[in-house]
Length: 95
Image (tube, rainbow, N blue to C red):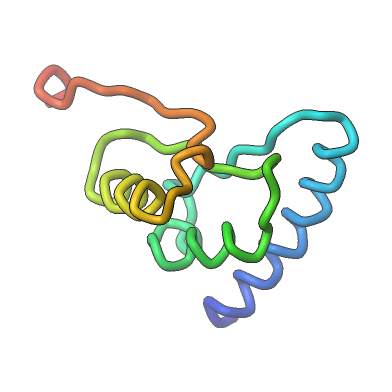
């Protein structure tokens, strides 16, 4: 399956989930780091743009290049409110 086909499936499922979340006033945070599709900044932004809900955002592990790039992209586009959860890690201690 192509990346675009996978994105369409992911987005379709997330839209249903977000509709459920909105009805119950809870938020859904997508963890982008454990997927071959969502682990690029461009794909994560595509998902964010197509979901377009205050109840949808990201869980970002604050270690690694992807976390930094996605965080920068979200802040640059005034979407810092889409960072729902982060994990902080002292990389010097983890080595």
